Image 1: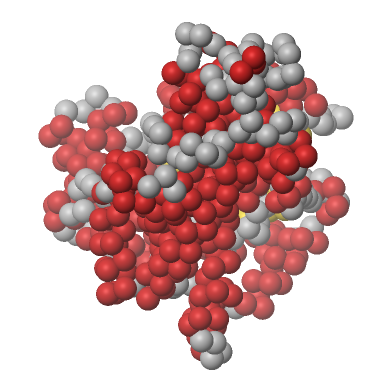
Image 2: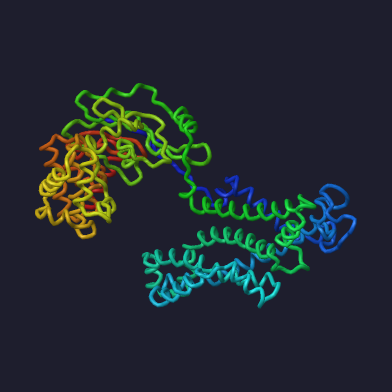
Length: 580
């Protein structure tokens, strides 16, 4: 059948990627945390003008005064000092201590991580040893022990704490840089004559700046908590107002003035929570993939109800079709309430014994359509409309029905064979386990069948391959193993997602011949997801061309290569001929 051509503009799915600052501004937790931190900074800067009294001045008549009575808004402490004024002035010391911790840990950890990750070898070995040794030290205990040496110098103590947490930045930066140093753009920078210093700070550092910013927010929150803990233990200066020191005095006097504990505890909690929330918001803003969220059942129902419907009823599934897809629509959350579709009303039929090639450029929706049939879409996906009829039964989104056919009547051949084999198990063991999971065969019978299937797919020494681990066999042999596993339960439909992409030309031809032979022997229906028109011409009976989530042409292979009707199909064919 020929699908009605869709206009390019209507078929295109445009997904806007907002700037990180815009994503941060849309996050309510980000807004609240920024507002709290901005308020704290403002209070610290304007402390001399905002504090109603001197933080160390005492008034005996207001000793342990309750809040909201007398001149002291939040009451007085056990020495007759204004609690509010001391909270305001203590904000300065807290901010300064956090900046010291962050500055020291960034300076040491980031620089060491850059050098270790980029140069590796001896530099990385030494850096790892020092990092492990520092992390093994009990930080708080060490700071308490050093009080006898450094005295009540909280800034020096926080600088030492910055050294103790520097390995966190070191490990983070080293890990990211180790993955980046082998990238082609780094090699290109070396070839162009750039020095290592310029490469490190102009190219490599850009790759780690987002993780550094995110981790910095968490380190600041930890610094506030550690500083308050040290001062609560009495390691701060009694002459300077501090939240931990106020908490210490309030606990000593808790039976006389119970509310005195409340104000410093709330201040410390709110500040630490603000930095933690900011770290989470920055993570979502700088890494959009981490912000993907699952929709609730109600949101999914709303998305389905808002999905555009066809004006006419979809065509009935032909009686000889094993698989019939009608009006399939798949989308993903975008923003707070919007769902952007990536598959728009797909119709596709596959008859028994027929090989259908599903072709199109990357991002056209081929794999999303295949995953919808298999029921393995990501958790964030929203199927807003459509049906997938397998042998007359709708299996789309029906877990109970999918369990009865998936692995038995419907099988899957993935694109990357090595990543789909368990590296901790031998080939034979995992194939036997998979076969026994969907059949009632005994272990010896399942093993005999597995060995027979391995021979059937062209593996001569099946016993030897069955004893090997995936890393001990070639890519072509791994693909044959997956094909053998796919047909083990004698399915009626196989979905093959780019099964020849990772193989060389000779092995590609052998795999395609094998798929064709299995179709002829067993009457299999096959959906072959590919972008290779040469593969389509070699093995397929029919071709369905996808563009921007729609099937724009569905015709026989002979008619397609004789002269496709849709302009996009003609462009694909011209591009393939030019490449040839």
